[in-house]
Image (cartoon, rainbow, N blue to C red; front, side, top):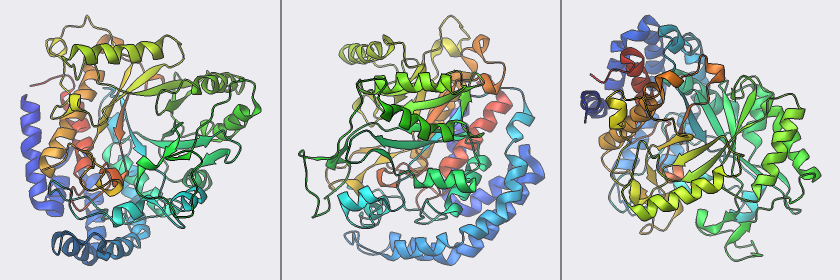
Length: 500
């Protein structure tokens, strides 16, 4: 572990030791942003003062009482109370955030890749969820009914400052945007659901996106991430008693047109273009919207090729298409198992031979090959050897993973959980390695300006609470994940490619 990591770890332990108080003292010591961040500090005190009594209720309910009381509703009531202060929080911090959002580019011309964060839009009522899971269901229901701890005894995080929000409302989206600007998140990547079947064609879980177009919040760069997969019961628990399966275990099947001239594809594009033309939509090479596919689906290729053509006809330079693969990043997380190496190479070759995708996203899904490991800057990069070519990979990073709220208690997948200080350290080390790799291992290949930059780091996730992946403030981690993003970028701006 290099000196940067040792220093980061000691700082992280100090921050976790004293919660809000330590966070506030760190704001004051954050000299890079000077008086501007003192304003943010004062606004933060204002928010904590307003919600302190509700926080106390949350903490008492989560840290005391019977761990078997899975249906305890005290955290839910407190969360609702906290969420009522979102308007005050937004009003108190808007001016200070506007002053700080562009500070990074003012410090230096050192160009970091854009840090993007996945946003889960499921926190609102939806007719398909009503049908599958019961009237009024959202993913908050899974978190509310979850035990206080997982089977290892680790606390399951619950939201504090934002509460159990409804993403169709403006205030929580506005606060998400302000947190992004305040802590150095360069954009959101929204899960996009679109089905081609006759029974339920078109978009789903899209109300927050439509409301974003209407009210302008969050006012941050964004892109769409097409989850072109069938919906299965394995996603969560028991379905609605009135739901009738057409195929065992399948809630909603995903179909793909086989004819590229199928009008349904053009209908899909006409819906997408309202986002592609939005001034905040993320583009590369000046005029190519970023459009991401969650998993490799051969049937989706006909759709993506036609969407690419329609984008060009619409005046764009095409689309930057990416696809997610469950694989390690070969330079940052090399593995020694030859069978696995061969398997991952076959998968990537299958993707690359079609010459459709510009990049793959190396998703660090909870897997044995990634257990107890962090991303590491390659030795050849540390030694300033510049003979390697940049991989066509977007580095994927997860904060933590615990899907106990969606699974049987004893069968949940636990990954990168445990001592909160160590979890956050691991996240920070991964982020530093990824940012350093993209910024310093290929200095001769860096883009001249941000608009041409196709380098991204993708973090999972801003708010997938029922899988333990949430950068938003929680009762377990506070704002520690957000602070790790801010601090890591700040250190890289200051030290650039020095590892001293």
